[in-house]
Image 1: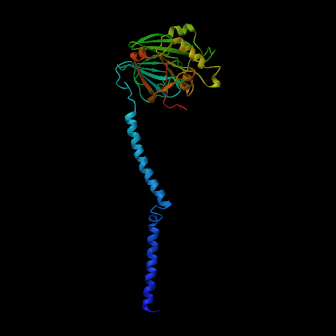
Image 2: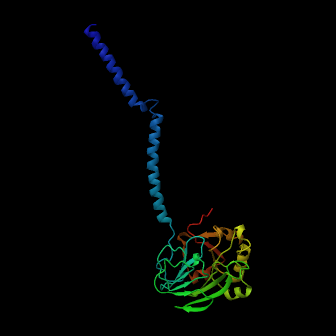
Length: 291
């Protein structure tokens, strides 16, 4: 073979190899400039990552801007700070602007508290967990009248379950800064009208009811809880011990809309109660499913 033919053959092979490599690496420039499917996927993935990153930042900024101010928490100057622990139980903390703290039915609290007063409705373990309580406090676990640090407390005899004479339950009322709270704890039987007459004019009612069929013969139902509400005429009802989604069920039974409160805590003031035009059902459980 002549030198000319050899050089020509080498040149052709070089051109073919170079051209093929060029076409493979730049295939997205073909088909009217559109990228190939694989490149499309990579491009979309990159766009999605960028878009999601921007969305996350945007949502965080939005949450910060739109998050309603937690009025009065930590540094409030009027009313009562009410905090609920954990979901579906009867443990509450009431605190005054002066720092006086009352814990009702302590159980699974998520913080250390140095209370001034502790009330226990009965002696079941989910109402007497003092593991997160420190300091010296007045423990009240009997019926009667009490006046501690300017807080007026009354305990009324009740029943843990319908018709159960052995298991008792104490319904406590607290008058704090002119606001009356009624804490029904594990009251399973509808109290007498005589007892309800003594508890009347409660501003805030903490009450249980069962929406579970298996407790129909032992715990108060929605109809009985409504009777209590009608007798006491509170401005705020906060469902406590009983059933998940009780707030939603109770509000529906009363033909009202439940209000879900974040963080399991609220501040209630006398002026807001006086300005209220109707009953409010507040669900301040933080962990109970709402669907």
